[in-house]
Image 1 (cartoon, rainbow, N blue to C red):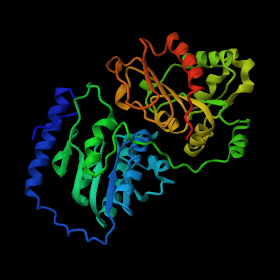
Image 2 (cartoon, rainbow, N blue to C red):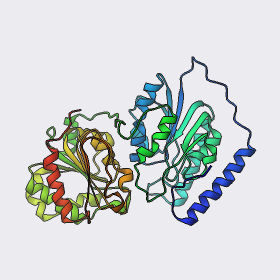
Image 3 (tube, rainbow, N blue to C red):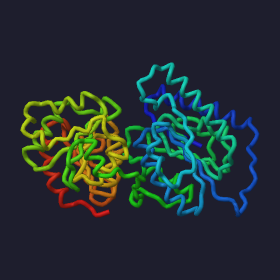
Length: 403
């Protein structure tokens, strides 16, 4: 079998090929796992594994209702980082979540030694829990680092499905691949064969985004933010990402805010986690509009954010978790920078989506979903983006889709 690696750099491809050669040789030496056939009276058991961040995990979770529809009464367990707990917290389809806080994906402000210690500790604890169960299928659709396949020797599964593009593919029973990095593809589209192997008919065109939120009472949110929030009257802005290269400069956001204030009558809920994000509101030019600016920095949980999206006129975000969460509930305008992921991780939603980006490889790429539009600009930090944003806000006000 010829593997297709998600990498173009020769040194890394050589490393991946070497690891796979050792893995393939080792698998041939190990005795085949023998599990009893599933009795008809037993529920179908599925183990979903993802070492990703919040956005990846949210999109992965969209297949859970489809699994329950295909296998009524199925038992679904999840292996994921502890930072993804808000995705599963209220999900009625998940029986239990097993944590593996992988070193590569841990963005917490810890030293490398601390992250490595947590990685080993959570992996060991996960292995102890996984050894107790037998699953009909294990599934990991992640094709970028890190894969979860290192856990497979400790998992009792009748069929193991996953991507073989980042090593350890020999441990899988059904191994799938994606194009090389630099190719134009969407991560949901390349996951379709894995869904099919699970018996699902999900595709990029048909997948329905869903997030099970414990909605915060509007009165509670208004008290928390010390502001009045009318239904569908405010623009929710999320100007942060977890990766520096995807961020936009403070000057861009201040210019955008000034245009929003002067050219629309909307209020703005300004969210985030960093103190410096709140400082961006201190621009003297914004002083006349303070009554329409709501500072929500460091005040919102993910359930709060989802609740606000349900009541928002629209959301404006970067290439980040809110870009995937918000369009489940409200229209979205998202800015994608050329040194980010581009078309590969354009969000899907239930509401209209506009992507404004300067990602050259994604220039002609779009998604086959209703009310989706991507717009290429030469400089996503520039005036053209500001002009298009105001234009699209006016258009999207008439395009809100009723849930």
